[in-house]
Image 1 (cartoon, rainbow, N blue to C red):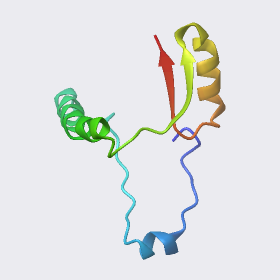
Image 2 (image 1 turned 90 degrees about the vertical axis):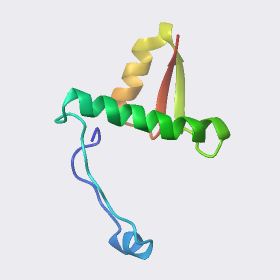
Image 3 (image 1 turned 60 degrees about the vertical axis):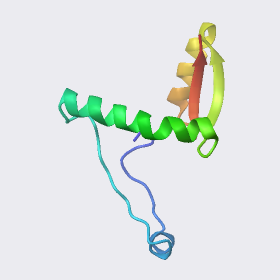
Length: 87
């Protein structure tokens, strides 16, 4: 949502792949439900990351000392993947 609430979507491609668009948010859910969702996600995803079947798209890495630059880069909205700040 950082780029705004509106986006273009190629419905032909979506239909051709029999894909679907689903929107959700954790914000309105109770804390216990959020905790359960995060725990289950970690349980399912961690093994895939560990085995290499799934990888994270890291756009850029910053040292903690350069945190201001990391925030500026994040706020620019030009990144596509994750921004990592190393301790």
